[in-house]
Image (tube, rainbow, N blue to C red; front, side, top):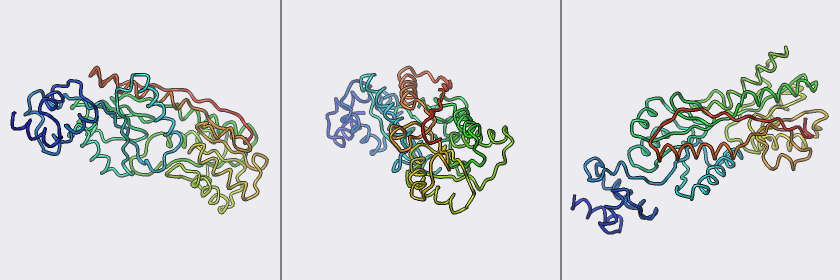
Length: 338
């Protein structure tokens, strides 16, 4: 053990006493602890062969995992604000580290393996991603809690919106306003490893049309990937190119995309809402600043983030894995665009 301590201490640039404190779970500066843990991983020591059991050492880090970080939707930004606010209310005991899979299943597996075996985080909050059951079982066996946001995995806790209800209410509102041909802009529903959120909104759109005896035409549906303003512009351009005669669009992909649709409609001299009604999703701050103001589905995004973060920390600190689902209610906010 003595030789091991010396090597780790030299690698981390700390004393052997500091290494022992980290191993024994005593209070150490977060940056220093990170250097010691990195040295242990880099030197490839087997945690189970070290006194004190480094596997039990807390990193005071929560890993937030999503598909993409280079183009966060406002939903994700507000979620992370919720994580930060809850962390602040709890005394800022944890570092929040963000990781992206780039939409790759292999990258996702490698990341989960690193969290499990290299001790880089105490818990995981997954945003809109599905994990393989075998990977989840391994994480649970190693005592790594996972909380899912807007995704459900059997045996694991989840915090989500009633996406189906929010989308159904939006489409039904358009129908009751007399709109006869309603388009849909939504996140990917068919690609590898996508979450349930876009699927639930897509299914609600179809169900609302069916319930009101309106035809479903896949030509009226555009799937987008990164939830950006530019994708909204492009979606509007494509729907116009198809010459579908739409009189309404439900943008289930979020308000930022809806604002892109509105901007492109303005460029094409399409009057909103006279000739085209538009409903977004999220109720971000800019939704009430657009002209016309955007009708949208409001969801308490920061509250979702705060709830998920609190659940994750409680599991980290108690060691109890509780598989419960918390569902929050959306609200349709009527403004000038529909």
